[in-house]
Amino acid sequence: AKGVSISGITNGNDMTFTTGTSIPTDLTVSSTIQNDTCFNATNTITVAGTPDTFLVMPTGIVTMIAGVNILYLPGTTVQPGGYLHGYISTGTYCGVPASPAVAVLSGQDGSPLGFNQVNFTIYPNPTSGNFTLVQKGDKLYGNVTVEVFSMRGEKVMTETIIGEQMHDFRFSDMATGLYFVKVVADGYVETMKLVIL
Image (cartoon, rainbow, N blue to C red; front, side, top):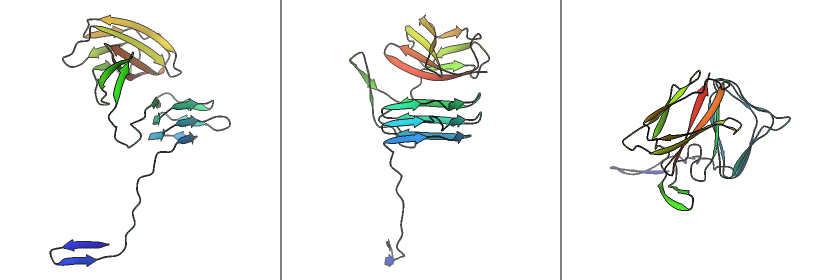
C-alpha cells in the first residue's frame, strides 16, 4: 500500500479487505431467533419445512425480504411477544439502502414511494383490546379503508372511515398475537403491525 503525505510517498504493508456479501438468490432458513435479525434473497426465502424448524422467541424480531416470494412451511413458529414480518421488495434488502421506486395502483402512475413516509399511526400498541387509528400531518384523507389481517394472512376486519382524523376500533374479541393493519387512502397504502396481548 502507498500513502502520500507532505514529506512524500510512503510504502506500507500490503493490506486486504473484504467487501460486503452479495444478496443470495435463494435462501433456506431454519433456526431459533432471540434478537433482531434480517434475512433476504433476491428470489425466494424458504422458512423451516419438516423436519427443520424456525422459531421466533418472545424477544425475537425477524424481518424477511425477498424479491419474488417467501415460503413459510410447517415448522415455522412465532411465540407470543415475538415478531415476524416478511415482504416482497426489489430495491430494499437487509442493510442495503432503498433504491428509488415508483408505486403503481390500478394502472395509474403514483408518486415516488418513500419507506419513511408515515401518514397514519395506531395506539395503544401493544394493546389488550381496542385501538385508535390517527391520521398524522396536514393531509386529511377523505375516504380511508382499514383492513386487519392475522399472521396467517386471514382478513379479520374491514372498515371504511370517511372524513375522520381519528377512529376507534373494537378489537377486544380477537385472540392474542400479531396482526397487520393495512390502510388504503386515495391511492396511498400503508401497513402497520398491531400486537394484541
